[in-house]
Length: 327
Image 1 (cartoon, rainbow, N blue to C red):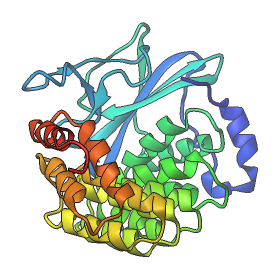
Image 2: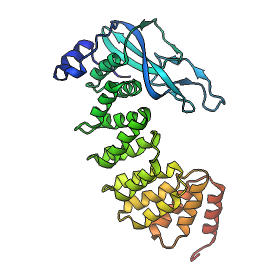
Image 3: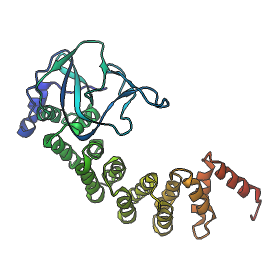
Image 4: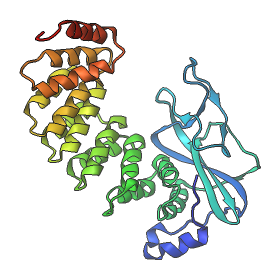
């Protein structure tokens, strides 16, 4: 992981934003410190796990000194009502930041100093100061996302709505969608339809698929049919296919026929390959045989069938190749 700023630098940099001033946390100059705060409703229970091939997947202690996020994630949509923040300092400078479910076991090479009585707002205020830096952004935003309270949510929304371009906005939209429940889903959906930056709209199309939104599929259909940017429309069809909606084949095929952008039509063919449970193979075969599609679209369908390990795909290709010239 990269380095963050010293607390003194945070305070100096935040003189223009008193509402985000650095909280007076009793942080050490050396080593690890940790504190527990209330989590937002439905916060994902981040922890470290053994092999995902094992069933059931077993929790293992997260190595705070190890590589970036080794084996960390959530299991079976588990949630937590409290999280613990871990921060490591050297010469008063923050070196590493991790946030896990409070119940998640951890291990470190050096002792971890426990700080008591820190509120979610005070912790969020300190984290807000760190957002002015460009390093450890993923860890800072992930931590803010699971903190209970408006202070953390407001910081994330401010970053997501920022005037500047860049990955920080996309990360903020993602964490808002993932961790902030229905309000977060609504924010990400509004961003997907209304943000001026096509790259942010495109990223939001992915973000809503990890949100609590109850209208993911219809919203992606609307985006794919209405966004003015071809790349955004193409991304909408990709993520719509991944939802596995019952009408996905018909909707995407219709888009393949009516969109005026060659790139979108090509990507819509690829989107069919993303349908789950063998549906992608059937949809691609149907596209390859559909003479109302252009020759290029049918060729793309055959290409993606060639990338499939499906027995049905291989049988179809054998039939096509065996037909000979003029078949």
